[in-house]
Length: 442
Ligand SMILES: Nc1ncnc2c1ncn2[C@@H]1O[C@H](COP(=O)(O)OP(=O)(O)OP(=O)(O)O)[C@@H](O)[C@H]1O
Ligand SMILES: [Mg+2]
Image (cartoon, rainbow, N blue to C red; front, side, top):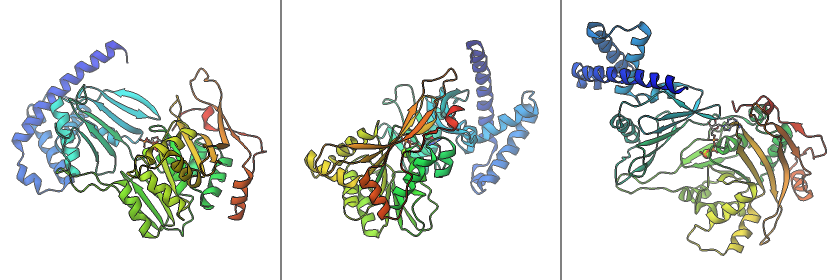
């Protein structure tokens, strides 16, 4: 937006804010709060809209029907819901909402971040919205707990951090529930090619242990969901997450979610406790949303003691880095194990690493699939099964390239054959990365 347009928009916003403020106060004077409390949420909205429309028609400014509708909606959103966030939450194309203080609101659409004209009337109003969100999950944000993770009733993950830790005002990050794409849809979107998808399908059915790695927002959870969708329907699956995001379609799924401490600092249940508990639940598969700490060791031990076919995600920059990260995370358990022992655990537990990346144009893609071929205490050795080879960025700044399959190592091939899986080995010509050429992460 040009500076002049921005200033004009700012001015309009200030006027709108003043008007909304005046009528919000008038509304509060007019309504009977006790009566309102007895109504259902839908009835409440209708009641507020009616009172507001009456107030506006008596002494409001001259507004077009559209302007008046928008004002009424805005004030009722403020009074009942999450204020200026409501229209953003209602917009399906938005995948992330980022509020950096009352005046700066950004959203992510189709993988790209943009500023939107929405803004809060004041820091006070932003605090009210934050309170409304965190009180729903029985938490509190204040000086003594200035960082909180919460969830909206519709499931969205919310992170809140306030001053003095956040220097520019209360900061809110809302992550939309990731769309549960199936593997076929990810192929259609160009996240991976069909050959790799069918190889991964065989690996899942043959009960290999798989780690999905990638940076923040690279699509790990989405991929984990699609991968888990390939688990045969008769198996008992236990999923373990910090904030339940996975949505599996199979018939026999038990979902576990960790819990932070309550306001008094009690009652926390860590991912680690859930992994240990899951082992006593006769799982065929354990799916860990993301390993972040000492639970990594429990997960590796589970994978090494008969709970194969498990899948987890880890935050890492490359497939190799993922193994290093697992080692660091596993060393965070209280069992102070030497590095060589941890390497032994990882080499025996992990069969495959699928590494994802969020590219410059916002698209998400499988960059490499690597088999772990080192054994026991050896240094990690990875053998690529597929690599994405990108072309130089063109003038439209979209990422294009090819998924290049590599020969599957004999050991792995043998294991897949024993499990009754046949896979296409890599002598076929590489497939082009389909929608990458037309671009976009949509
Ligand atoms: N393959 C894909 N194609 C297009 N969009 C995708 C793809 N994978 C994920 N997304 C979108 O990207 C966003 C982030 O996805 P997701 O939550 O799966 O990432 P993540 O790596 O698990 O993030 P985090 O690091 O926060 O856990 C979501 O809005 C999701 O719908
Ligand atoms: Mg995730």
